[in-house]
Image 1: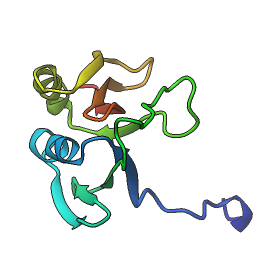
Image 2: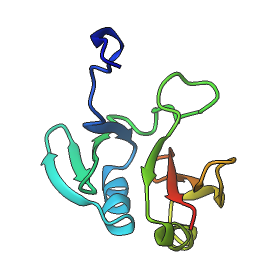
Image 3: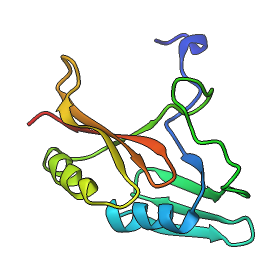
Length: 138
């Protein structure tokens, strides 16, 4: 791939931005449940920036959560879901933790991802955002 016209002009993901109905609940989920660290905040916006050391996620408070439209993966253009890597050992532990986490609904438990050497699970985190977790097969 030496032809510059065929080379990607991007270099990975810088951050993901999500609008959420309850900034405090969603912030708590990423920090307390997933172990992210808060790396910034803009109280007047309001927004919080969290990171796992590899990816940054910006969480914005919806201005009117009561009138906000919840995501419908089959009918809304935009983010279908985002996926985070976890270790092989962490996937099952995370599943067990998420089963007892308020405002989280699990779409499916860890299972093989087709013929790929990966297992994955899907859930909706506080605010209804769909997140997939992937781990290498052990």
